[in-house]
Amino acid sequence: MKPIRELNKLRDLNKQLLSLSEAALGLVKLKEFEALEDIWPKRARLIRSLEQVNRRLNPFWGKWSEGLASLSVAEDQKAREIVDQVRKMCQSVLNLDRQMNQMLLSFRDEEAKQLNRVNQAKKLFNAYHPRDPVLSAPDQISKLR
Image (cartoon, rainbow, N blue to C red; front, side, top):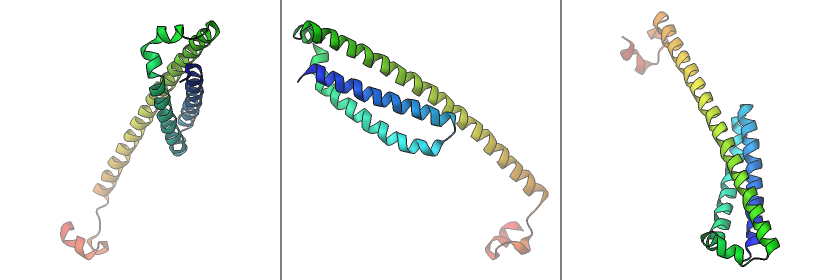
């Protein structure tokens, strides 16, 4: 295994994940929830790919200092830079996801309040406008009387 090549894959996959997270947040801000259905499967595939790369890098992560010692000075520096970039991208993805989560929870609460108001209005309407048994289906008449 070549750690620099795997670290580059890790960085590239994290860039793609960050890009999708930014797109998802933009869609949530625009309340384009249906469009999110296209993004979730892509994110899931990226996350599975990230897991595979991390599994391949697991021996390297476990012996980080030994792994770096086996690299040349230039590769050592490159590996550290890539890991720092990946760490920053991961933090950005987490922050975007937290932001999106808060917005989605807020939208959910607004929708629940609106649905509650609609249900209350229906009950009030039905209280003042009782259903005429003649207009009811035959099997419903006995329930209305």
